[in-house]
Structure formats: structure tokens, C-alpha cells
Image 1 (cartoon, rainbow over the protein chains, first blue to last red):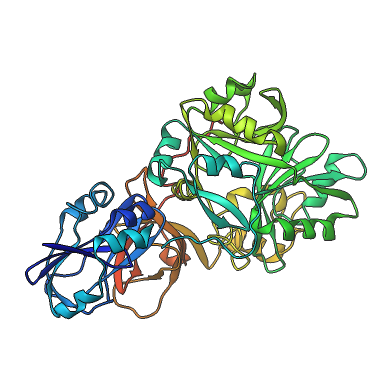
Image 2 (cartoon, helix red, strand yellow; image 1 turned 180 degrees about the vertical axis):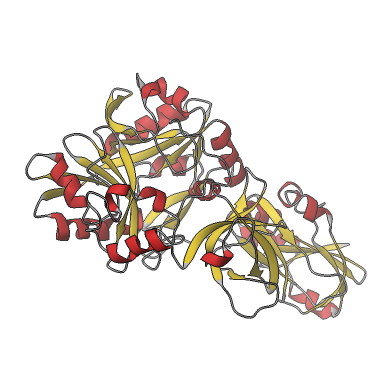
Length: 121
Length: 382
């Protein structure tokens, strides 16, 4: 299992040909208290860089972009009932959606944890 | 999603260093470098203000003294009535009133507080408008009044159910003040102007203090464990829940006070048949709307779902029609209601209480209901 990161502060956990995607702890700390999360529909084919989800704080709405292309296999319905999970456990329970990876080549452009740490430093 | 400091130098309030030392996230706002939130975060800051007390730095707002050249404050009040639809003459010494500066087409240039301090009028105006307001006052009122801005004064707001208890430790007799009482008062041995007012829907006070004493006073208030510092983020969600207008968003030069549902602030004496009817900019239009109604009105909106509907979202009469009938001017999440809240403009025929409309958000039509404001009942001490 590998965890990769985007410069837009998303994380991807890669298990076989499935990527679980969420936003990083750094991202949630910048957003502030999350009050609403809108997730993509299961079955939707997402293209890399396409707006896939929306995360809203009291202040503002922010898009979450598909870090890679793929079909949505599953979404985290727990976020609808408890958006604050994004603040309390961004890297764990607050995953957003799972994608069937369309092109493993796209993973090459992503950062590993050390590179992401340097990116947010 | 990250706020970046603007290239142009931002002004700082006298509490800037204290905000930075308190761990505030600072953003540009109306030309000032202001705290949008403190470490507690917008949600906790909002709820704390409604449960205990919050301290707001509103020093970016403009404070002005309007003094009659004749020495009779009634002459300054009469002069100011040329610019606002409110009865200023009737503001008793020690009292304050909400007003709007209007333009020739009846639109709102700015909204403001006007207090009668006996020997002069004291005005508090919005930060973004303060230079234009001062220029307007000078242009129109210099014949009868002197206009003195007070850039050397800070303005602090202490808001919430514990505000009276907290401030009473520093100032005697505050409990006797009622909502919209205002005047010079000593706080912590400092010469201040204190009003029992604010912009959160809560009981509370606004305290004008000389800039060099502002940090000292803020620290005295913050040392009380019932008080948290509150940023602009929670200030916005609190005033939205209270149904209060944000100038430049919910009201502007294209909206009249009647369209903005602020007719409660226009006294009988300035309406048709009143002792001093009209005589302010845009009076023809505003007085006609007071009598015959306005074509569109500012209304409160509650969402059926959980998605916040924000400023700029277009409003539709049904889920399919291609033509918008209005738009949202303020919207977001109301922490005290734990639900989205918004306000916007709708044609009078569509804006009745309970009426359903739809807002377009990310290509979807979300159902909303017209709802009475304030969304959260106010707790002013009348």
C-alpha cells in the first residue's frame, strides 16, 4: 500500500488498481470547520483534474479535484452525516471516494510523503 | 483556498500586534489586515459568542463627529436629515439610531449608526465607505457642521449574554444602559464612548477608545475566561443569522431601504404626511415605495438540504425555468441553527413567507423556503 499526494492537498491510498482519495490534514486546517461535503455519484467516470467533490467550511466552498482519472467505485456516506470528520480525521475515516484507476501512468506525477511535506513546509 | 497578502500595503488597527500574537489568521479586508479567525475557529467562535462573550476588533470602521457650527446639536441633526431617511432630530441625548446614506436614485451608499452625545453627533460608518462618507458629509453639510473623523480611536465590540457581566467589572452603571443607549463613559479608568449595540443579534456593547489604550483594554477583557477573541468569519455568520445586512452585499447603490426590508428604520416624521417628510436623496422613490410597495424585496432563505447556498447564487421560481427571478446576496452555514441560511432578493409576488424557490448551486437546483428574519431571535436588552 502506497500513499501519494497532490499539490492541491489531496492524498491517495493505492491498493492494487483502487485509489482511496481524501484531503490532507494540512488542507483541513486551512479550510477550518467543515460543515458540508458533496461527493461524486458512484459509477461516474472522472477525468484527471475534473472537479469531483466539494468541501464547505462556514466561510467558503472549495472544490476537490480528481487527482487521477477513473471510475467512482464507492463514496464515504459518513461525511454527509458528519462533515466534521474531515477536521478530526482527514487522513483516515474522512476519506472522500474510491476510484478504479484508469491509467497507472498518472500516478507518476504525484508526490510521496517526503515531497508533500516539503511542499507544505 | 489560501488567502494571500495583497501587494498594496494594508492598514493596521491598533490591535494588529495582539491579533498576530494570539495566533489569528490575518486577511486583507476593506484595506486593513484583519483577523478572519483565531485558533478556536469560526464555528467555536460563533457559538461562544452566543453562549458567553466574544470580543471583536471593529477599529477598521469609520468614527466621525458631526458638530453644528451654531453650537446647537439639533442643527447638526437637521442637516444630517438631508442625507438619510431617518428622523435624526428625535434621537435623544444618550441614544443611537440605525440609518442609511442614500443616493439620488434611492440606493444605499452606506449604512451607519448615529448617536446623540448631547454636544455633538457621533457616527460609525463602514470601513470600505468611510472616505466617501466623509467626503459626502463635507460636501453637503459643511455649511452648518464641522466634520471630524477620529482615526486615532479604536472600536471594540463585546457581544454575547455575558458581555454585561464582563464589562461591568471595568465600568460602573452599565446595567442601566438599554439597547441603543450611547455616550461617553469611563471603562477601566479610560475615557471611552460606549453604546449598548452591536451586529451579532446578541446583547452587547461597542466601545470606542483612544488607539494607544486599545490593546490595554482588549487585554483586560480577554483576561476574563468568559471572553474569546472573534474574527471576521464568525462576525459574518453571526450577523447573517441575525438577519442583518452587510453593506456592499445585501445593500448597495442599486437597492433602496424599502427593497432591503429596512423600512422599520424610517420613522413616520420622514414619510409622506410627516413633519419633515422627504428632503433626503432619493426621497421620491423611497417614499413612493413606502406607500405602494417595492417591486422586489430582501428576504430570508432557509435550505431544505444541508448544502450552503452562497452569495451570487441565482434564484428561480421552479426547478426548471431558465430565467432567474432573483439572487442570493449573503449565504452560508449558520452554526447556531446547524443549517444553511441565506438572504437575497425576490420579486414581491414570490417572496411571501413559506414560499418555495430554487437556488442554482453547481448546476443543481436546490429547494429553499422564504423564512422570517432574524433566523436566530435577538437578545437585545430593550
